[in-house]
Length: 87
Image 1 (cartoon, rainbow, N blue to C red):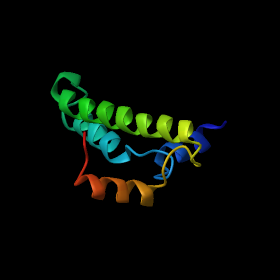
Image 2 (tube, helix red, strand yellow):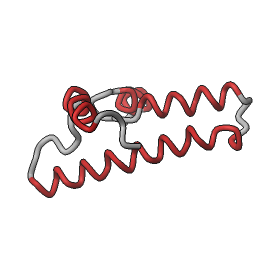
Image 3 (tube, rainbow, N blue to C red):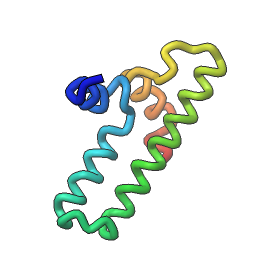
Image 4 (cartoon, rainbow, N blue to C red):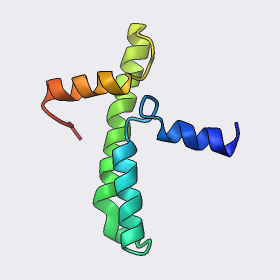
């Protein structure tokens, strides 16, 4: 896999449900000159996001639902039904 296709995959909303959290972490690092201690809340939010959607993906795989990761549109519906992000 080339670096370009890998980067595109990370930025694809249907594949990566945590783009917003990832961007927040990156902006924080840029703002605080890469002082990681200043961005721990952003990192935790990203970890919680990944953990939540990984659990959803595993459960869908067990249930035989395809695709394993809900599309961006499906995720919006799931989050709306939950009343917002659970992480």
